[in-house]
Image (cartoon, rainbow, N blue to C red; front, side):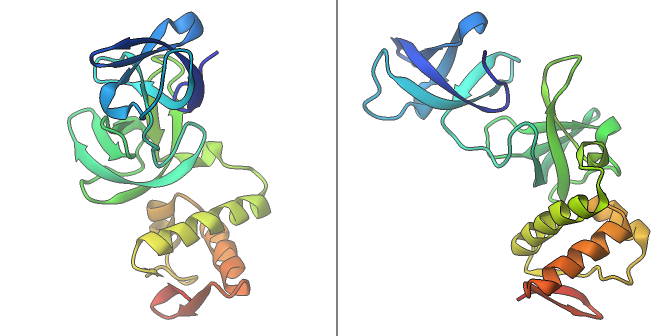
Amino acid sequence: MIKLGDYNTLRVVKSVDFGLYLDGGDEGEILLPSRYVPENVNIGDEIEVFLYLDQDEKLIATTLKPFVKVGEFAWLECAWTNEYGAFLNWGLMKDLFCPFREQKQRMQKGQRYYVYVLEDEKTHRLMATAKVERYQKHNGYERALDFSEELLRYLKENGEHCDLGDKSPAEEIAQRFGVSKKVYKKAVGDLYRRRLITISDEGITLV
């Protein structure tokens, strides 16, 4: 059984001018376009690929490594928007859709957002949601530890500084990170105890 939005090891069954066809089991043959075909791959070989849906909503394979897969959290940049929602850059040719109903605030081009990637139960399309709370662990301590790693990644990707400190309004923290002030303060405390950040009136800074 294949896994959409994840890595799969599939067998090459056919070679054509525009790529290779892989054995997708019940899903039939899945195209790996020629631009993603590694050298010295032959019919019968097995190859690890990432599976997603192309512009026509057809199953397609790639050897590119996206920034995130189904079931994971990540900071992604909004590439563009339209009347249906936002499209986030996740490292593949087709951007990842985040509908308005899954946004906490209207996403804007060029801004980064903390999202969770899932397969829509109704349409079976891949999508992102900024309403991450329902997918995070319910235990407060575990959730804070999880978020501390995300906060560390945010610092590394955003100039090693965050202007939100433990005295910042809870609304600003929730708007940017989608977590409570309590969880944010616990995560900051965890990073500080690990000597990974410094704390000042201007916020927190990566050591």
